[in-house]
Length: 124
Image (cartoon, rainbow, N blue to C red; front, side, top):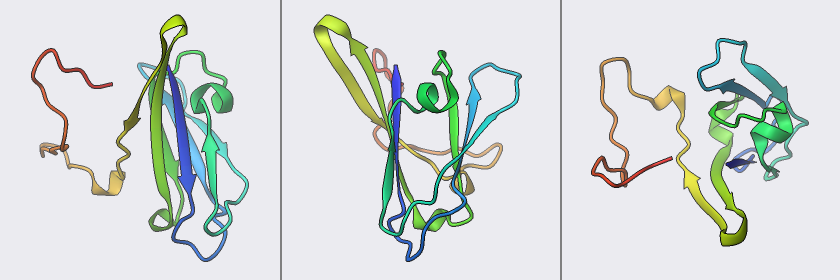
């Protein structure tokens, strides 16, 4: 599987200078990997193709990526997951991106529109 990220400085009037991505591999007890980027100009964007492999050099692409900046209100983030089926083509889906500052607290529930628990449905 391949995960692409797109990050846009859509609402800024100045460059975004402190953007960092943190990758934590699933099931790993090792330290989180951090990547810093060149500034993204106002109304500029960056596409990170196969982010986990190209940025962090990871062969296991399962885990979480956190996008951090002091100006989180200025950015838009999109994520896409692709599965290449050589002879049969490529299957892809957009992944929801959540702000941790708007997440559920411990013990609370959070409903995500469009997702269901009924078999045989599956979400990635």
